Image (cartoon, rainbow, N blue to C red; front, side, top):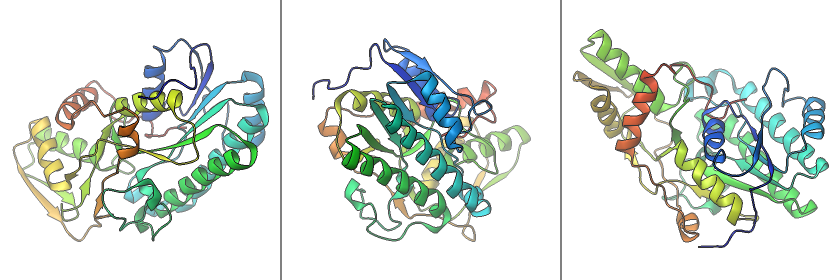
Length: 322
């Protein structure tokens, strides 16, 4: 295991997007580090506006920034609001990174997404697969914006010597997820659908697509632990995948969620709806070689996830919230 090269202790840390699923997980994880946490609500600072972002950063002077703020959503949201997904994410990334450079932020961690990789990338997907093929059309607007953010971070490291690192998590789930049926991702959408079917006594639940695509799911608390781990031990140009190294078909996921919520009805699939990328499994060799492995098994994570849902967080912030 590598030794610590960046100390979080004693630093002022800004988690951009602290109310989202990722940001709130980072806040929980960083609470055990001897650091000062600062936050900016979207009502007081619009990160799409450079002057507002610059004024806030100049006043707060954080040493370390986690860029977890973004506009995210599922296939339906990406299809219906492509301009928002492209503009909002480009502006947030550009403003935060440029102002961080100007104000001398010591380290910045950019959170990407596994959707940045080509639709038909070899599996498992290694970090060098980026920009080697066409993207999945159902989320290309978000993916293009996130790729631009990654390249901006790398460009700033190359030109200005900024200690900006880029981390790419697998599909996420966990506390404070977004369960809105119009904008949620697959795991949240299925959990809500099966829960409501159990409550209403529905005889059947129909799942979008064929059920054959395979996805990798990472609990957001594992992501937060990996982010802190890499903050302390990693400083380089190359991006780093964060995942479990295991995937599951949508069909098997639907059955696992049905079992978790206690739904005993039939499950069918609608092949007229889009499947998205056929398979998306990250190669986590680079991260594992540094000494980190995911610790939350999917079956355990789903059980806790449903408990969080039942506690009342039906509509949380987006995974990467502003």
